[in-house]
Length: 317
Image (cartoon, rainbow, N blue to C red; front, side, top):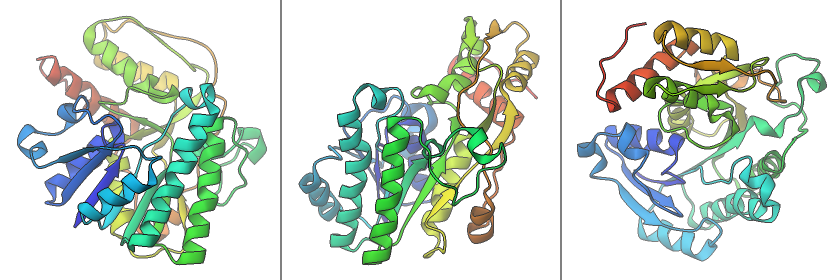
C-alpha cells in the first residue's frame, strides 16, 4: 500500500517510516522541512533510498489533496504538529497547525475515500492527577488540558469522532506520553532522551522533574502500536490511551549511572504537572497491544545506539 506520513522527519515519524520500509511498503514523507537528520540515525541507508520526501504545508488543504491524489495514498499517519512550548508561545499558529491540520487530513480522507487515517493525539488532553483521584486515567476520562497544545489535541479528538460518526471515516487517534529514544529532540519530555545522549558524550546534564514518576514510552513501541492500529479494521474505540512503564525519573537516572558510572547527572526537584498513569485496557482488548520495552531495556538500547553513532562499543545491561 501507499502510506503518507505527515511530519515524518521527526522522531516518531522516522521509526514508523523505517518499519514501513522494512516490510516493503511505499512511503511518502510529507513535511514542511523534509530532513534526514533523524532518519539517518535510525534507518539504514539502503532501506532509506526508497523513501519519497515531499515538502508540504499541512495547513494548505489543496496542496495536501493534490499530493494524496498524485501519490495514490491509501493510509495517512498524521504526526505533523507544534509541540510544547512552541504551541503556547504562538496560540494562533498552534490552532492552525494542530487542530486545523487534522481537519484538513480528515476532510481529505473523506473526499478521497482513503482506507485508514491514524492521528497522534496526546495525554496532554487530560488534567492534573488530583482531578482523577490520583488513579489511572480511564480511556474515556474527561479532558482538562493544561496547555494550548493539549487544548488543540482535545478539539482534534472531537473532530475525529465527528468525521467517523458522520461520514464513516476509518480513523483512530493514539494518545502518546513521554516518548524517548534516539532522535527525540523536541518537546518538554525530551529530557529523558537528552540525559542519555549527554552521558554518551561525557557532558554534564541537569535532569529536571526529579520528584516525578513519568511514563517511559520507548519509541519503537510507539511505532509498533501505530502500525498495529493502522492494520486493524474499524474499532469500537476511536481514540486510545497508550503507555509504556510508569517509573520515577530517579530510577532512570540511577540505571543510567549504573551503565555509565562516569555520567555527570544531577537531578533537579520538581514535577512535570500532568498525569502519567493511564488505563490502556481498550488498546489491549481491541488491538492486542502490549509494550515490549520496560524502562531499563529502552534506556539500554538508546544508550547503545548513541554509542554506536559515536564509534563506541556497546554496553551490556
